[in-house]
Length: 327
Ligand code: TXA
Ligand code: MG
Image (tube, rainbow, N blue to C red; front, top):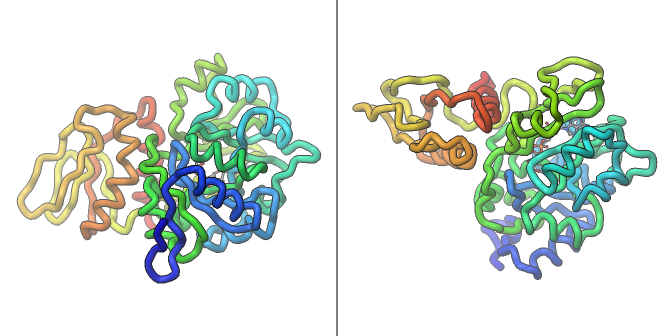
């Protein structure tokens, strides 16, 4: 285990000792960043308002934006929320995995009001990454965890990204290598008449609709709509300006390519290809990594090649639009 520079968090490889240690910090009300299959999460004891308050202040996140509570399995989720039959069907099909369910909180649920931002609903996810599962089970309670980045910034897919953003503000980062899906979970709300897609993510809409046997309601509307940074214009943003649907590189621009469309150009910056083979899963996994990489290479403007809207392309395009929105 190594101590990061200048009072930064402890960084520990993801072994049993680190999980024991992380669980102890969580039970004592501290902050632990850990890998999930989507992105790194910034965890705190979801049952403690005092612990959850530290998440909001470490991230600079407005406290009207509720957090996802991570649970070990469906049984734990049932103690926290009133899950209607369609939600149970999705949980059975896709948990553990990159799916978050929003439902009315259960009477006697343990997720604290601050984690829910005062709402009568709760967001629940059972992650599949072994480190995340082990941490939840060892802590013995739901873990509230947003993505482990400063609010508004690109989500972290490596422990190094977490240290860059939050190093001095948290206690421990458990390093489990790269988060393999690379974009956040898909969020489905069960507060309205029909299941609603609140955020496209690492689980494609097509798979959910097939399991439900019906299309998901989309977009805003209904009493369930809340204002949240992850759903508002500027979010997931690198420092550089983004130009979307680009078919070429202009002078001074770096490139974020897909399928080798952007030709090199004199006077232009580096080009990173999300997936030369046009594989959307690979592109999702590389998205935040490459945005951070272009930022660190000093890019000030990035031309982004078109990404097809099907499958994981929906989540990729959603994040790109937010990253491109005026700050
Ligand atoms: O993959 C993920 O979902 C990652 C990993 C760490 O699990 N977490 C993540 O958390 O992306 P965060 O906080 O960055 O995004 C959670 C989203 C926010 O947009 C929040 O508004 C929404 O979930 N959310 C949480 N509770 C909600 C509720 N009761 N109703 C509607 N939206 C809710
Ligand atoms: Mg986030």
